[in-house]
Image 1 (cartoon, rainbow, N blue to C red):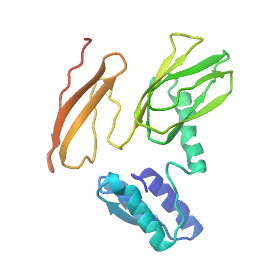
Image 2 (spheres, rainbow, N blue to C red; image 1 turned 90 degrees about the vertical axis):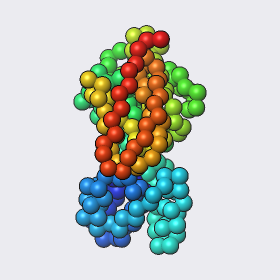
Image 3 (cartoon, rainbow, N blue to C red; image 1 turned 180 degrees about the horizontal axis):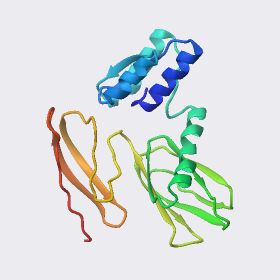
Image 4 (cartoon, rainbow, N blue to C red; image 1 turned 180 degrees about the vertical axis):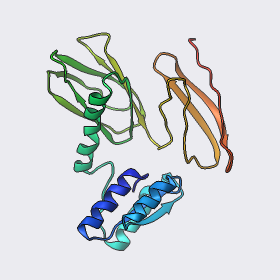
Length: 222
């Protein structure tokens, strides 16, 4: 099961290995990613409801007596996801906010010559308080949706945030505050906007089946 990126990787690997591959994707997945996955030879099964996604996957797996490649529970995949954290630090050293899916792993790497201490503040995920010398990587799995604050107890000005998302409809805004959420099914939704200093604002939004839905949100200090 995948929204597109893992689907293509699994389909490509299956083709290289000469085995059949079935991928359960949500109907809201990018059409380009669906075509690419099919292009690698996988049979794509589109499913309409995220709430019953796992049940449909198990149904397909049982019918074909297939091996399940779990996108959130496979240790090899978790290790691969975790390496994204190191890549972000290497390419975007000033990044402050990272969005990960529920079940995702973030690897916190200390590439400084100084000693650091990672200390999380959360309510749904287990907190951690870890000393981190130079070169040490600390992998952390975030299993429940929430916004987690990460501080360094040794350097009080150092702070980062991990936003754990339970669905694929999220975005980080551009510098001017604009954002786009693609492939959102028609319906009524609660849009949640969060900023580390200004807090959270919600708006009720109705998405149509044709035109792009625009929304303007103003945020200010309370």
